[in-house]
Image (cartoon, rainbow, N blue to C red; front, top):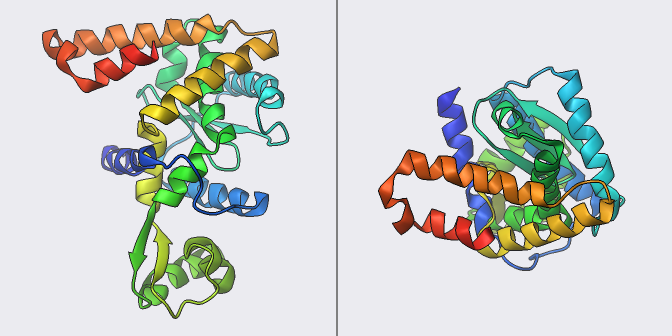
Length: 252
C-alpha cells in the first residue's frame, strides 16, 4: 500500500508542471473518459472508506460549489481515501477524492468547503487537463503495440479510440506520437499544479465560496494556517529556509 501510494505521489506530482494553456481541445466526452481511466487507476491503488455521513457531507458541499464555477454544468462525485495522509485532489470529469486524514483534520465545514472549492477550481480552470497534456511521452511507433493496444484490450476500448485519446489525437499509429504517462499525471494531482496554478485555484476558491453565500472563505485560510503550523513543527527551525514554506506563506 505504501509503495503504491509513493508511486502515485510521484505520478500526481508531475501534473504540477502544467502549462497555462491546453495544447489541444478536449471534448466533454474525452474529458470524462480521461477521468474514468484515471479513477480506475486510483481504485486499483487505494482502499475507499465507506462512510455515508461523511460522503453526504462532502457531496453536499460540492453540490453548492459547482453551480458558481466557470463550468457549472459539470457534476462532481466524491470518494474518501482510507489513508491518514492529509490530501485531496480532483481528476478530469469531476472525480473528487478526500482522505480520511483530511476529514479528521478539518475543524469546520467552512474549512472543508475551502479545500473542496480549491480542488474544484483546478478542474474548472482546466489545470487537470493541462496536467494531462504534460503527462505525455514521445514514443516510437512500436509503443503502439506494447503501450496503447494492451490498455485498449484491458479496458475493452476500441483501439482507434484509445489511440486518439492516448496518442494525442492522431488517428494514425504509424508515426512517433504521444502516449500519456498516467503515473506522472496522477502524481501531479496529489502534489499540486505549480505556483501559478495553486494561486489561481486559491483565488477562484474564495470567489466560489463567497458566491455560494453559504461558506465562509476564511475557512480555507484557517486550514492552511493550521497545516502550515504542523509542517513547521515537523520540519523544525530550518523550515524558514525551505521553498515549500515560502510558497505556503505566499498563498496565505
